[in-house]
Image (cartoon, rainbow, N blue to C red; front, top):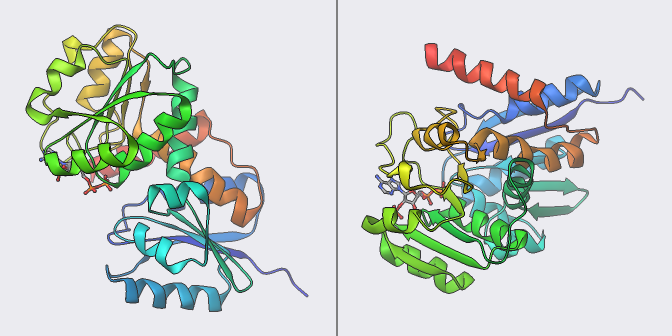
Length: 282
Ligand code: ATR
């Protein structure tokens, strides 16, 4: 019987802007794998999500990535869950195998890989400052702890959310208006908020206070070089950008569903940067 193409995709709302189809298509092309990776818009409710997943399994999808607002729905829908997904309380990957649906979280490992590729190893003495307390912050806190960080401070506009995250993971909190005071002492700085993204307000940080060797990361990838990363690079600090995290989080899904090599390299980055530039010009 003729071998059928492998099907996978990304579920979200909105989802049209996702770069994941480009990443998976590039890897499939390189590995000469016959497959499609499709963006699928699913309205925000759990019921809509579950209906869409049932349909994709009927059609024979191998799995999907899941993005906002469905990461918690994915966890609820699955019948088996990896440890990182349970700890994060969210899944960005569902793998369908027969009657089983397995939830995993590669956002955590994606940050770890991107961080390891960019900077020196984390030492237990390092002080990390995480800005934001949403889903992305949660995954990044787990990643930083896995990398060995023991001293993590959370600063978030809504203090209750910072306190809840701190309570869950044994962290400290800093008042949002006093971010700059804590910036000076930080060895690792991660922006997990949407501030600095095209169309969003800027992230107001006194970047000249950043320590010379601090590793600076930003989940935002449009623009690719945020003001925070621009200032950090100009000072000679190691940086981790949103695109590096995005490429690394995509790799486990590609390996699981398409079964090929998923290399994060300069050629892939160049394709994505080209696409982001095209979009900027539109
Ligand atoms: P994600 O899952 O990507 O983390 P999220 O859960 O909506 O998305 O979290 C967005 C983060 O950006 C939050 O920490 C949010 O702060 P609040 O908890 O106070 O909402 C932060 N954020 C968004 N807009 C912001 C702004 N204008 N000023 C400060 N923080 C902002």
